[in-house]
Length: 319
Ligand SMILES: [Cu+2]
Image (cartoon, rainbow, N blue to C red; front, side):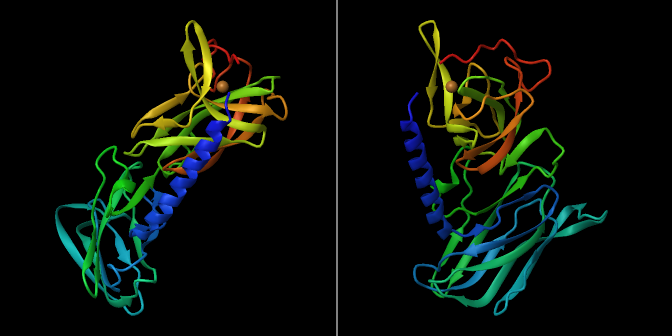
């Protein structure tokens, strides 16, 4: 059991944070995620001009699937709206149909100095399909020159690798009555459990479901019930199964990764109290893409699992 991985993981996490801070210089939607089928208020944030030249217009190209989009009025800027006529009428909400949708919105006539940032507000009705990603292409025009934010990552490609990514809006599952114990961004956490133990160490298990297109990584876990928490896997050395700390656990785009006895797990080290059946404890998971979420982990009987039929006998926890 090594604690060095923890330092390494923290440093990697920190550099990921710094990277996303630098990425703040891109044109981004903030907030970047809303519930499926909801009316969603966001804003395109412009962090700098073109080179040193001030921004004088911002045009957003709306992707298919958006039926209702309204720009927020902005003092000092005029708004132009272009509509497209569809071949087939689509549902526009409240039982109405429409064959006309907004295709572009342009704010024009202002003057945003390179050294300043500003936001251009949008209200839109999100499509019903959870897990979907909407990419809004943005053309930033300056007194001199323009920047075209229209790159969309290919499947599996990290948007951070792109020089001029389009602005992303992610559609989260609006259904809170679902199976997920918790969700953050595109990540759902299903059926968390820990086994009751009188020992100083214990494992926490769950299934991580990535509803997004790109892969993500579980970078760390933390809980107030333990002195430290590590991410572990089991490897076979000869005939013996041993645990190893891993720097992260990957969840493929549109994939599931099971944390289960005998495989990946969250290792609770230095439990401050024994884990008692029927109790529960908070566990905070941090993902590279989705961010951090805290969920409640129920403690089941020794050898038990989250499901009533159980996965008992999947092998114990040998240290
Ligand atoms: Cu372990």
